[in-house]
Length: 359
Image 1 (cartoon, rainbow, N blue to C red):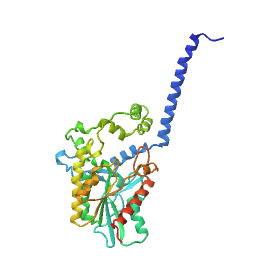
Image 2: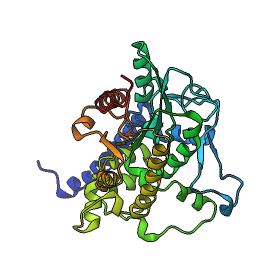
Image 3: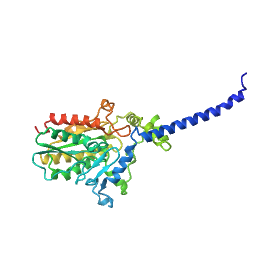
Image 4: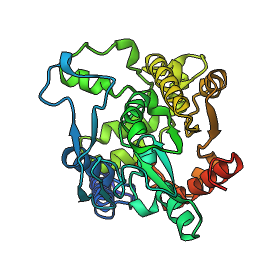
C-alpha cells in the first residue's frame, strides 16, 4: 500500500539534513587533510613570515620618511645567520648575502660572477646547494677548471630593479666582479619603496594603481570559503585564471604588465635603474647580461634593452616547463630542485655561447 503523500514529504527534511551533515564532514575532512599533509604548500606563508621577521634587517626602521633613502638599500639579510625555515635553510655571510664568505680583495686566479635579482636569484624554497647559482660554481670547480669560478648571490626577496641597482653600487667596487648577471622578473615592476612609504605614513596609494579584477567561479568560491576553511579556500582560489580575469577587466585592451596597475610607474623606475646598472658596469669594463625571467612577459623589455645596448637573453619558464613539475607547490611558484636544474642548464649554455665564462 502506498503511504500517504504527507508521510513521504516528511522524509525530505531528514534527507536534506543528512546531506548537509555529510557535506560538512567532507569539507572538514578535506580541510584537515590539506592542513596536515600540506599538498598545496600552505607552509609558504609561514616560512616567509619567519624569514622577514627573523632574518631580515630594515634600514628604515626608527626613521622618519624624510630621512630614508628610498632609492638606497631598504632591506637585506642580517649578516652571519643560519636559519632553518622548515622546508629549507638559509645562511648569510658578513655582507648579509646568501652563501659563503666572500674575500676582499678578490683572490688571484678567481673569476667572480655577481648575481643580482629577487627571490628567484636568491633561490627561495630550496637549500643553497640546490640553487642554480651555487651549482654553476660547484660544478665548474669540481671539474678543476681554471680560473676558479665564484658566484656571489646578492638576490633577495622583495627586491625590485631599484634595489638591485643599490646592491650593485655597494658591491661593484668592493667585490670586483668579472661578470654581472641580473635575473629580471615581472614583479620587478612592483616598487619596493611603496611598502616603506605606506608604513611610515607616506602618500596614500593611487586608486588607479589598485586593479579590481572580476571574479570567476574559482576566485569567488575560494574567497567565500577563506574565513571558514582557509586551506580549502586557497586550494579553490588557486584554480583561477588570473590572466583571463585581467583581460576581462581591461575590457578588450591588450594586457601588458608594464601598462597595468603600478606597471607604468614601476617600469619607468626600472628603466632608470637598468641604465644605471649598465653604465656602472661599462665604467669598469665588466660585461652585464640581463636574464629575462618575466612571466607574463614584459613585452617592452627586449625592445628597451635593444635600444639601450643592454645584453638580454631569454630565461623564463615555458608552459611546457611548468607542466613538468618544476615549481615548489601549487601556492609557491618558485623553482624546486628540478626547476633549478633547468635554470642551470640554460644559464650554462648561455654563458658559454656568449663567451662570458673563462676559456
